[in-house]
Length: 345
Image (cartoon, rainbow, N blue to C red; front, side, top):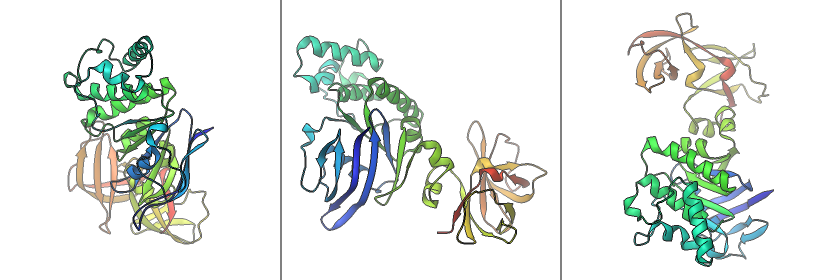
């Protein structure tokens, strides 16, 4: 059953519409994500869910109760929503136990202490009760902020760019760790981020947003392998959109060669675009096509090559082989099973 429902939600500032019309359902116990570039409206949506922003149309439901509409605006403190911020927002003058128990002061001392002990064990910081925030690392402070938000057992937890202040190596590890904690607690959550790897590591369902509009709401796998439009295709992962024509043989004719069409889609036009991801290209001396290597980036497990074709367009290719040199002429083949074909926008 859906725990959170956004139905035709519109948010405007004065006369400017930031979110024209937004729909989203999130089942209880699931982790959703609002993913998009800066300025796309994802933080505005989060603030509307939290109650920090009023909505001008539509409605927001939490646990079958309307919490926001043009006529209803439940105060933030009554929504049973927890929040975790990028800057942790821990109280520096309170020790860790007092920070975690801040939202459960209505419980008696024994129950508060038990809940604090349980949460510290859950975030792998048992024994830290008497320490202060300045004595902890950034990752530890983030886990304490999560424990504090979970203490009152909110119906919904909102995480606003929670790993943005961490270094790149720590972000994905923290995202996996936080996901495990939320799943253990059975907490329904919404993450806001512009980082795809965080979204992929943490969320069950990801809402990709562009200019205030939902482009696709799906699993990470479907977003990558089955993008709904060319904007999602270019935003998620890496790849190049190549113009092509559907020829009389029902194949894809590009400026540098012909490719068989293996898509089951029915197209209404002959003008198409092909998304070619780096892993679809194999550098091999027996390849059907020729290109020059104009850039190479070592990525540890593989090397990302930029290939310039005869028409001066470029493709990306990933390979475990690092022996190819800049300006070297190479041949390549394309795994046409991995191509994603769109009608031209």
